[in-house]
Image (cartoon, rainbow, N blue to C red; front, side, top):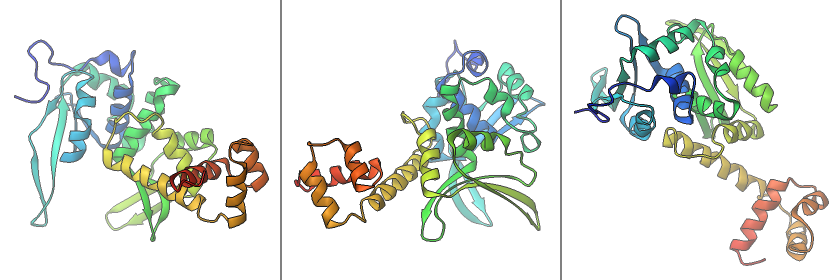
Length: 277
């Protein structure tokens, strides 16, 4: 018996994907735009991911109704075993029709603006979280620095990402490249503060919806930025903060020291751990 199988409930709750979109269905719609497979001949909607990722979001899918959850699928590449996968699928006709009219069948030549227009503004971050889990990558390292990268086909219409970045007032770059087997396009956000703003938006009020490994990478970036923001405090600045802690506000302290408020908060936290304040 597949996970979620129930004699009285065999289909996905279609209304959650059109008229009553929830945070779970918004996330699923984003993930399906990135990695979903929509098959017209049998109205099948499915997604394959590595087993640990599917395990992270199984309950998210099941909160929207009945989905088939496969057993672990062993995969090989050039004779070598790769990470085990799982598949989530449904043949709910109504869901297929919703996805079809919102261009999910022809994703590579369209934009998700239709479906995004149906999602309440407060829930759109869940769509982008699903999209990040499927087609995005959060990078932190010596080679790449800090960046968030989304991948798409060569002719990808990035207007939906441009609109988001404009709303958040952050910079981005787009590069298109042709290779032997075709071409691809990358949408990048690679300025430290812009990466933080984008990820803060996507993971606002995080509630365990999404791939845990991507969220952990976000936390790594936040910790890295926080550590860097308190690394260059002079002894004089530190003494000023210790002397005036509790006497003036953190906002006033940041003005007098000419430091970002987040840096002051981080320094206060560090000093408390060291029992200096």
